[in-house]
Image (cartoon, rainbow, N blue to C red; front, top):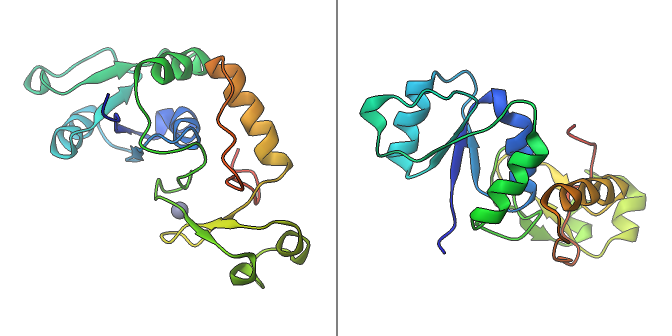
Length: 168
Ligand SMILES: [Zn+2]
């Protein structure tokens, strides 16, 4: 099953971030109108995630998933069960969807707290927005939330993680 790449707008950013944490490639276009989302999805070969049940007729061939506003956990579970992610959990930047690079802690010196540099063996760095990620208590909480949502354990992926300050 080839990975499914998604596209959505700011109304589903919460879901988008969590899918990115699971390893999905999810582009977010803030403030896009529905037609603009479908247009971009067609151009990029992506599947639209939307709250809207309206599917513009001229984009009939573009795949779309309608997400119920009140049930993000159920939506996450349904998507994770039916679609292949593009990479491992915690392998992409939740802020900008870029694939993270593994870096040695010494490279993060001066940019992350010294106690982190001393404790971890690897960190991940976003080459796009410059943010550093590492395993921490926030990662453990997020992992628990995601595992509960999708109803199964996530692969333990070494020192991959989304540390730093929580984004939610
Ligand atoms: Zn980033």
